[in-house]
Length: 310
Image (cartoon, rainbow, N blue to C red; front, side, top):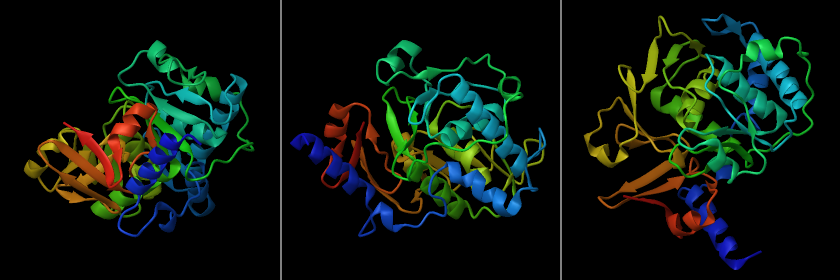
């Protein structure tokens, strides 16, 4: 291996450790994102998970299975980067889980055009924003046997929301959702709402993963708990430079730390950070796998952590 690449990989791994706890030492109840909805179906297949349109765990899972079959029919393969379009809820969310069921990688293209993304990824599959997922998958079987099952450390999501490709693993996503559940003390069957569109990793964590991970019901009309960019019980904020001014109900978002980094000024579980007027240093299990750009990795990952410079 190239000595510089070896150094970068070592620094990334060091940044993902917190204290003496390495990522592999924290137990997550699911071996990958595709196992999350499968696990929920083992015990809770008949439980409602979305109020409108009314869907149970089993309904949602069957849509995922059909989606994986449809994706395969249009040429998608395991590890294939697939661009997630903005579709009516919950179609983008179902598509994301279908991508994971296939063993592929979801891609969020918030701030870049298709050509710029295509130049950075290996043969990405673009799906139109005009797609009606329910129409596309209705003739496909609800039976799907995955040919590839990624492990926790492999890529699950790539987001371009900052302009730079950020790689997130299955573990990153699960541990960030787990940490938010702990921080907000979210109980099973809580009615939850989030207003995010599929243009950020925060959408994947707070809207696609967290409700299912926590055994909640997604309910826009009468939520017990709302997590929004405005007018919610908790507000998602990207200006972590102003962290000292955050209220206890403000959640700091940092895509390089998967999604959440703190609730108020308190770091989420398995995350630590140090903020100065010039930079933000982060360590912990939610720290990304790295940028697509190795030069950025080289300048951002140091021996003692990951740095964002202002």
